[in-house]
Amino acid sequence: MSEMIDSVAQIGDTIPIVHISDIHGYLEDARSALLTVGDTDRYDPIVTVDKTGAIHWADNDYVLVVNGDLIDRGPANEACMEMVWRLFDEAPAGRVQYHIGNHEMAILMPSIFHWPDTYSTSISTIQRREFLERIIDGDVTAVFKGHNYTYSHAGSNESIDSAAVNSALREAASTLLDSMGTHHETQTHDQIVAQYDRLFAIGEDSARGSAAGLLWMDFQHLEKTVPPQIVGHSMRERPVRKGNVVCGNVIRMNQRSKGGEGVLIETPEELTFVHRDRGGAVRTNTV
Image 1 (cartoon, rainbow, N blue to C red):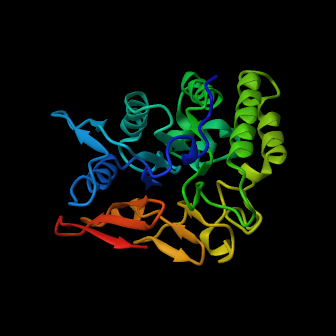
Image 2: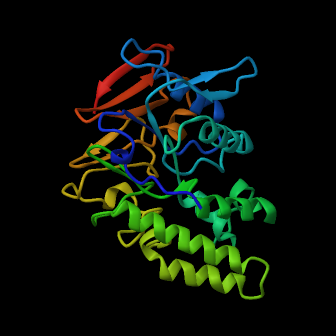
């Protein structure tokens, strides 16, 4: 079990944070979004691409937050997973933060979900075990505290203690791993959702309601005055600011048309959206 890095303060005072969320198996869109950073005159690259199209960590001083829902709807789920693990191995410790989203929750507790033809609910027992071990080792977390914003997949109307939440996720993963293959595994899934509702509560009206946890809260239920947060989960064409909260889930919407994909970049001074327009040009806008 490695020491968990829960905050940018553990890495550096000025290091930029690059945010991407809800890739959902659309590797081409993710590649294009990540490459926008180096396609500007303002920022050094965060990734490079080799002759085979594989994405690699560039020699840089960034933190990359992959803010949940890496997998499930697109055609390249395995390749997206391989991309994140490759970047995790190539980057310095703590520089790649892979957050659990509600679709990663389905890897942990497949008996809770009835999603046909999805990657998360159809992976092998060995793959599930390996993912749980990744959480226990600190490779997959739920929250990261940035310079001015706290990052989680769906957000919360309460203050978020990144170290406490990530520790709770580790505990839950350990219990789930111990229950795998036992006669009470399905019961354990239900117990974990109830015990760690801050993370896993789905909320009223089937999902995404105001009582939902950090993996499920819909953006519409987040209040303007909450502590500053950056979230994904709720689809948007462009990043949307509501008071102190910014939603940066743009990949799933943009995969329907050519161009538009991008990332958020947080520095101590500002939050910027870097994106590729439909003509292929890269533009930056302050959020």
